[in-house]
Image (tube, rainbow, N blue to C red; front, side, top):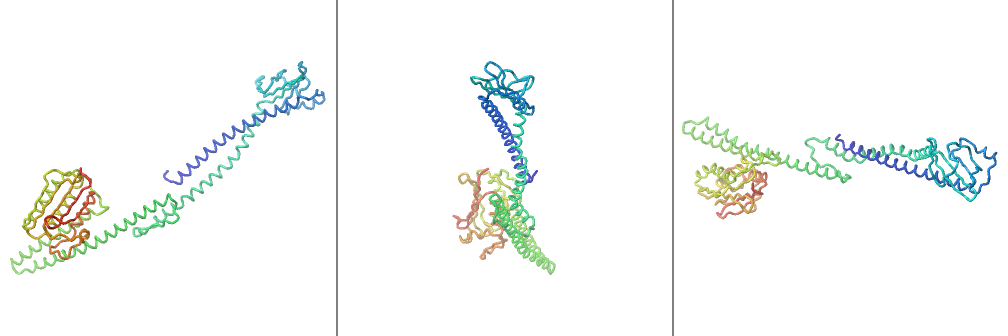
Length: 434
């Protein structure tokens, strides 16, 4: 039973039934007690009203001798002579018990009240069974209205539940009518306080989805644009290879084609890495990793490029520094930082990588002696496919975007500053150690 409406109705109806039963039981018991008190009061008043009554003539006594009368009145003189009896009853005692009493004679219970005066003794009796039947009838009549009110209340509860849940049904209908292209915010006017947070959360989710879809569309468009140039270059280089007139020209064309394929493969690799680091992409399980060893292995992959450019690549990572994360993603982060530092610095530049603990936070720092990046461009260079106009080195403009995406996946922050070597300093500070 997953319906809120059904559960709400069943709960309210169960509470209503329980309340009706409890009220009915208390009402029934109270009416019984009050009726018993009223009957005792009648016995007492009847007996007290006969204290000054004279002797009843036999004719009058016979007129009162009616079996349909519930009450039996008996009057004796102080010496025991009967001067009045409404009718003869063999089951009643011939002597009165003063005050209220229950008399059980031959399996039948009587409720009696006796009072004595200086000249007579008066007793009024009534069968207990009749009293109980009359009291029960009165109690049931007092409870009977609940039997009619309870169904009406149940209908009112059903209507109120439907009316209360109507805003939720409207929201559900609005969401159900939309398709994957309808991401505008849901209307939030006139919603109850309990439904408004849900609509606000849905609107925030729709807004994030819209941003994510726009980002993906922009990514696909930029990727298509970026891939068009290297693929066109590869096509031209292939045509040059096909038209090469001699072996030397053919070798030159093959080298150019190989370099073009390498650049295209690098671009595709970066695009795939960036897609895996996008918000919403599946995140691999975080495992304990020695950051120092990981940086050491990543730097080894960049070392051939540094040697080809005559650059010095130094690593300071003597002590193990452990973090939780995905080894492949963190390797891509380090490779992009090291590759950018070597590639965008002049030949013969100096590049240093340090892995250390900044207090309790694992930190990776990359310094180079290149031209650096102006402070006004520090935030812009993290945009995808952004390349500074004065950069002579060809590239895709994805390196720092990948660095930030991977860092955010691992709860780390990336900061840019001026290096002590004169170029750019990139600091990646992780939130906690393993």
